[in-house]
Image (cartoon, rainbow, N blue to C red; front, side, top):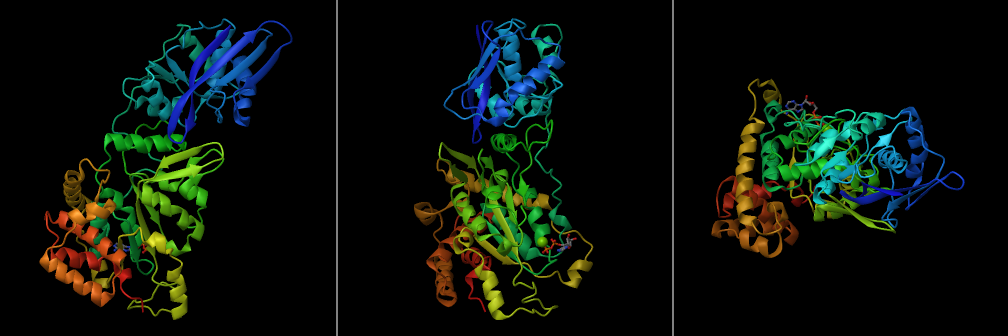
Length: 510
Ligand SMILES: Nc1ncnc2c1ncn2[C@@H]1O[C@H](COP(=O)(O)OP(=O)(O)O)[C@@H](O)[C@H]1O
Ligand SMILES: [Mg+2]
């Protein structure tokens, strides 16, 4: 008799159905074979499954056992097939009704003692289960909450193989997992702080507000200790809350990456990722033999913070260009091509020079001009090109530090950001563009025409500062965001003037 169970295989952030087929023939010499492009971890399932069966006091008759993972042409990896395989063997040997899992999807790793251990990718499996009309999922306890995120799906999360079998035989009850609401469960949780804690730095806070309002990437330049890291970390607190759809996207990425906290449900806070500058290209943009999402995907719908930008490897920064442009990472493999979402805001910080004190009134810079030039030249031009806002973050003056009254709070800033985003939503309805940072071409022409005063101001700036055509379009779309914050349909002189001031690197270096 051939038994068939539903499980899943994973490609990027999507799951596809994998049929775990088990055939048990009580003739000939006992043997076990597994086919269907199973990789090492999957083939080792045999040893884990047999040990777990022994631990649960289950016995298999001597038989020739063949396991097939269909579609046989797609590569299977990971340990999620342990539990379906164990159940399949029990069904094939008559210890469980052969059809008891017909409308279920099953995944889980087994320990030698029969405990059901966590696997990655359970949320996409549950989404697949709903799409194909299945009624329930049987998953590891640590992954129960993520599966329960899917509406209308009954999720069972047995602790052990024996408990699962007793449940399927109708001997014990197993309560379906009840989804927790209001759960925040990204890898690092949301202790983001508040902008009220930042003293002074009004210009930098304004720049961050503009960046958040239009989804613009941003670079902060300033001496050590001026608060750049502090400012960046608080950016998620002024971005609009994740919509349900966005939260589902983010949670799916964390699920596939195996980064959800044990027992965590939907990720409700905007991600903030700050990989160290020694990060490898693969860790930053994703990849590997079994392609995994990188930091830029873990930051999807949130913030990717690169501190000390010039210290990052050239290859890593170059690799970021395409995701920042497209909002997705494409990883090409000989056998397949995988894409991961990667729509994040980039925030970068750097010192003005290697010693950090160039332009600081309190300290003397010890760098030679050519050292400074070399330091700046390490920023890749094309990456810089993706960054609309660059501001200086000078050291906090003593008077500001002494000030005891709180600065403007994140809540107030978030309110203005949300209003500006609403204006953009209305403007871009029916187009693929989501916020002003995505404006280019005809759309830019249409929505970013300056009025007469703005036109005159821009003309002078282009002449006097020697602005390039590229800088010109960046200024226009920034001005659009500033006007949106101002609830103004026109691009006025003041909007353009502020936009120009938010791009310090356009000015000739000295
Ligand atoms: N504007 C500020 N207001 C309040 N505290 C600040 C400010 N700037 C710096 N600090 C303090 O100094 C510490 C270091 O700041 P940090 O953000 O790491 O600076 P940077 O990244 O520019 O080197 C912060 O943790 C904070 O305690
Ligand atoms: Mg810092």
